[in-house]
Amino acid sequence: MSQGAERPPRALVSVYDKTGVINLAQRLVALGWEIISSGGTARALADAGVPVIPVDEVTGAPEMMDGRVKTVHPAIHGGLLADMTNPGHVEDMDNRGIVPINLVVSNLYPFRSDPSVEQIDIGGPAMVRAAAKNHERVGVVVRPDDYPAVLAELEADGGLSDATRRRLARIAFTHTSAYDAAITDWLSDADDEPLRPTVSLTLERQEVLRYGENPHQTGARYRIAGQSSWWDQTAQLQGKAMSYLNVFDADAAWRLAHSLGDDPAAAVIKHANPCGAAVADDIATAYRRAHECDPVSAFGGIVAVNRPVTDEMAEAMADVFTEVLIAPQYEEAALALLAKKKNLRVLHAPPPEAVELEVRTLGGAALVQTPDTVTIERSAWQVVTERAPTPEQWADLELAWRVAARVGSNCIVLAKDRQAVGIGAGQQNRRDAGRIAAEKAAGRAAGGACASDAFFPFRDGLDAAAEAQCATVIQPGGSVRDQEVIDAANEHGMSMIFTGERHFRH
Image (cartoon, rainbow, N blue to C red; front, side, top):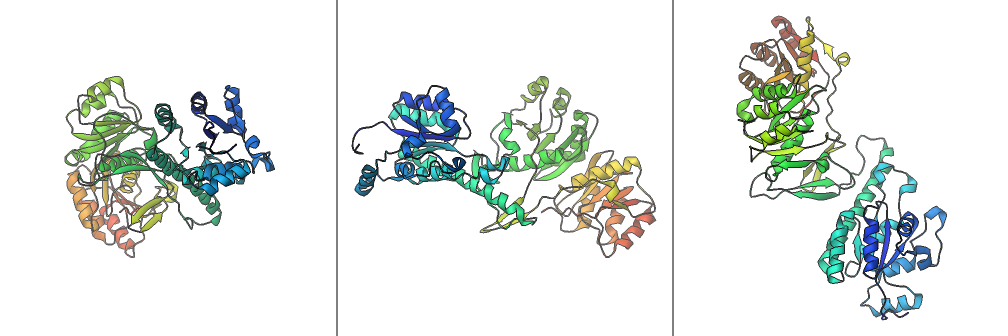
């Protein structure tokens, strides 16, 4: 049949994620389209009563090698790649009996979920890329979320606009890029290096934010293609749209709240630094104690808790200006109370995922590192003083150490009764960090713990902890003056722990 003759449009449908595909195919058939398909997709469509043309009927070549060779054929790729305005292309199609394919609906196996050689798809990415390359004529859909809009446009206009096909092509190339990146990462895992030789990052925009760090900047939240984030399952229950800093600080608060142990815990974040953290027997008490650490800094802060928000906690927040609240659940009475705070953004979220790599861009370069994990293991820590911590002091040491690992360096954290009472963050020298922490503690650290994210280079840092009336200190150790600092602790009758692990944070 000459390509100039009238014939129905064709869609090649082959998907791993079959969400919505039957409805899509049924509506395409109702519009007069022919459906080409193979494998599990063809069976699913046929079982639903959708007329399907098997791929091997189009190619004249049955699939072979356990399905490794199926759609890689001129009858398929010629139908996708032909430029119908080029007489030579049309002549080639006529000579070979190739029929144009107008739409490809295909998504690829989520390789990261069960990687293996057999899951490296060849035909699927080739079809998607061919359709995307020829987007001036061919539509390509790789996300079930796009089915409704595509169908609506086809039903309303009889075809897809140039802008729609271009947008879908961009999404398709992102899809195949993420798939290839997953394979690359899997192959690189055998390189026995903490960091792979190549790191592939394809980012998909998930949300346009109110603005960036400042109102004159634009900002958006992206997701690494092929991976999931706790943000993907987060619901905003009230409040205006999130800004860049709201998201940045909320992530820090949520991760801190989930790093404080198994008991009810609360964290307050301001400008990416904790200004309060506490663990208690109930979440309302944990929140109140976290807020008490530094009420001035907590103004306009981000609050995260690892337990459902109760009406008692919501009442405790009533007079506190808070930008964002994040929790796993909310009591109905609590939501009613929080609704009175119109500017409060209320987020319902799952636990945060583990971080695989930390990436920081430097213009056209990047710094990449493994995440800073905090090890809480008393058996691996060393008591270096004559006096050992009491059980209560051990609990304060652990809390202070967990919080210090999430505070910008240099930092000092003072804690008492499982409550941070003074945090000195982001100082160029440790003495200033200790002074700020002690001023904020205002005597509340008496008998408690002092944590330093790095070693004390001089005894003056230890003396400052003694002046704040701390009874115990936790630090990495490793200074050439360690013995001088140990002697100072013994002079003050304090206990001190060396962890052997530093937690700088920039």
